[in-house]
Image (cartoon, rainbow, N blue to C red; front, side, top):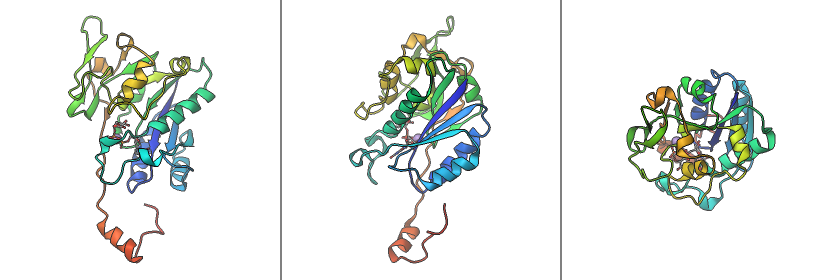
Length: 253
Ligand code: UGA
Ligand code: MN
């Protein structure tokens, strides 16, 4: 099965660094198709060049987040959901381009996380929805499904943050088979989901807890980390920009 990895991305000082790291991971994954969805009204040269250079099979799409749904500079990051319309655009593309019998798996790969290669081996044979632990998220070292030791099925989660969520799991912690996605035309994300309920909103339209397929050695291994990149301090750069002197405009960073 081909893995369709969906990555929402937006222009910012660290964008090229994030996408470089991610592309270098994806170069090592066989049979992966990268769906990059730029949060912009048209594709950018930076993303296009980087992705072409990578040699990874890919599709570039765009979906701008309307201004009222964008985080403002001083907003805490949890104030508005991120990546929602971009992931929905990718789901729409998959529904238009896959056939019901295509063997494929869909994974939401944000541009700032760290992915170990084992993760892709684990998700590739997903029949419905597979799940595994995610490191460094939800106020814990690791957020993970709890299994019944006898049956090996998911009986709950160890989540600390809003554990009452139907699926207290990060976007990086699950994959979906394409036939399942295509059989549920209404499954998508919503801008108006409560904070932290995006994953639950989608998963509730696709599956139930008892059907989840645990991976990563019965959910005892961490193969993905929800790292977040610090915004660089660019005071001097901004001062030069204001003075219109010595700006680094001629070099792509
Ligand atoms: C957490 C989850 O890991 C995300 O999957 C979820 O979308 C997010 O919370 C949320 O609640 O909306 P976090 O690290 O805080 O993640 O989110 P970001 O990594 O900042 O954004 C998620 C993805 O959306 C990234 O790939 C990012 O490049 C993209 N994004 C972010 C945009 O396309 N546009 C934006 O304005 C911001
Ligand atoms: Mn992130």
